[in-house]
Image (cartoon, rainbow, N blue to C red; front, side, top):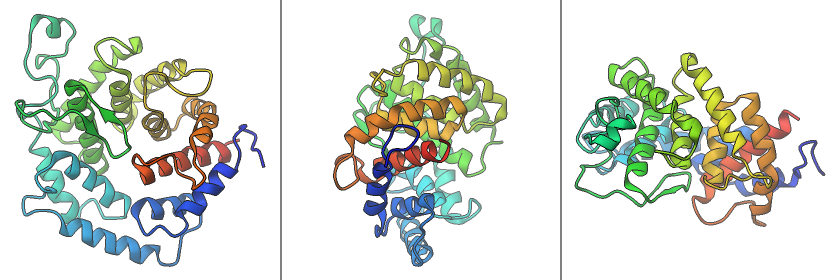
Length: 301
C-alpha cells in the first residue's frame, strides 16, 4: 500500500520484520519506534548496559580509543542508562579531558587559515580524537559515513563527542559552551556549502549545533534550508552521505527537515534490500536511521 508521501509502507514493513527479534540496541530502539516493544526488551537492555559498562577501562574509556568511547556514551544513553550514573560519568570525564588537547580541530594557525577563521584564534573547545602526529583518516562513524580527509575526520569526531556530552547534561560546561560557540561561528560560512568545509562535515556540524539549545535554532533553521536546497531531484544529496543526512534532519526535527526527508524516501526505498536493510555497511545503524526517517514521514502525512 502506498502512503501519501509516495513511499511504500512496505519499506517500514520490511524493517519491522528485520528488527522483530534482534536482541541489540538498534533492535530495541526500532521496536520502540514501531510501537511494538517485546516483553523481553527491558531485560535485554539491562544486560546490554551491564556488558557495555563492564567494557569500560578504569580510566573510563573503551580501550583508550576516542571514537569507541564517544559512541559508548550514546549507546548507554539510548539503552536507558541514567546520565548521572558512573557508567556515563566516567567516559564523559575521559572525553572532557580531550578538549583543547593537541590534535584538536582548529589547532595552529597560518595566514590562509586565519583569513578563513579556521585557527585557534577563533576556535576553541574541540575534542582531540588523537595526537596530531597520528593519522586518523579514513575513519568510519557508527552511521557508516567514512571520512577520508584528516581535518574533516577530526571535526566530525569532535561533533560526535559534543553530542554525547550534550546528551549527558554537560551543556553548561565552559569548554562545551566554547565548542558550541565555535560551531556557531563556523556555521556562518556554511551557507556556501562547499568552501572551507566538505558538505559531510557541515552535516555533522548541523547535527551537533541542533542539540545546542534554542539560542541556535535560527542558525540551524537557516542551515537546514541550505541542506534542503542541495537535494537532487531523486531525493539524494550528491555531496553527502544519505544516511548521515537523514540522521541529522531527523534530529533537527523541523517542518523543512521533514519535507526534505519525505523527498528522500523514494531513494531510500530504492536502496532497500529484501531483508529490509540497506547493505552491509553499518547494517543495523543504517536500518534504524531509515526506519526513523520513514516513520517520521508516514506519521506526519
